[in-house]
Length: 403
Image (cartoon, rainbow, N blue to C red):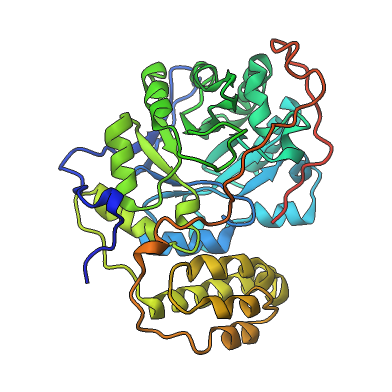
């Protein structure tokens, strides 16, 4: 069986020798103390996704790629972490297989709170990498001045980044952001410059605006522009990496230093194994037939049940069932029951009757997962854009960790 790929990637060839360099998150000129670098080879990062990139899912992705990529936790709210909220502490926890590369994404709007969370994560939790969320477009986040809203206030962005970089010490800090609020207010070049000046070890651009949410096509030209603008640290690209071949096209088209993979791996944790292959000059492994997909789904369910408890783990699994089975013929009739599972036995009953010999469908590669195609008017605090140079903190009273 040969690799399944879409028409878009029909003629893409695997990486040539020396074409793709490792991603090194090492010391920068702004660092006061040098450190042993965190090296990711090939340069592939799992995007933080709320309700998705918890420890069980990261374990699956790691198994398929022999722990070669960087797997970032879902967004953790700094204030909830500092205050010891039980659910936040659970989501911030790491599996037994993550003890050498603990990576976490922090969200917040208050520099002092973010710095305190960073100090605890470094000193007590032993994290190896901290990513900062400046790209979340969700209304409850942006209307309180957080996520994708923060880069519109460059002085505040600078103060937040500086506080976390200083608190992290030798632990590398990266930042992830979008192109801007909308096409009228693009902030990504300023965000990249500020991150570079304040000592982050890499910047990542989701090449859509907050107003776009997940609609349309990602603007890879913006990634190329950021790479030309940020010269001393790696630039990572995020957006529309649904197949391993997309990653190669992005690297070649933009000159970026690595790829961040989000929706493309939903229900497809084996994508990281495929990425490792093509980025190191090898053909990817054959795509899984339905039997192997069902086995992975069952293993995911088991891991979630162990981590969250059976009932809550199955509630987490419900959304994944449709993602795993996307494109396979004849499975839609099984989805209503799978979306209501409460136990592992319910899952087995829901999967009964799905054939194990169905080939992986090409239509499942780029099928929409998780997010719809709508756009939005970005909600911001009143007067947020009238004094953009202010670094006044808009404390976010509502955003807590979910999933």
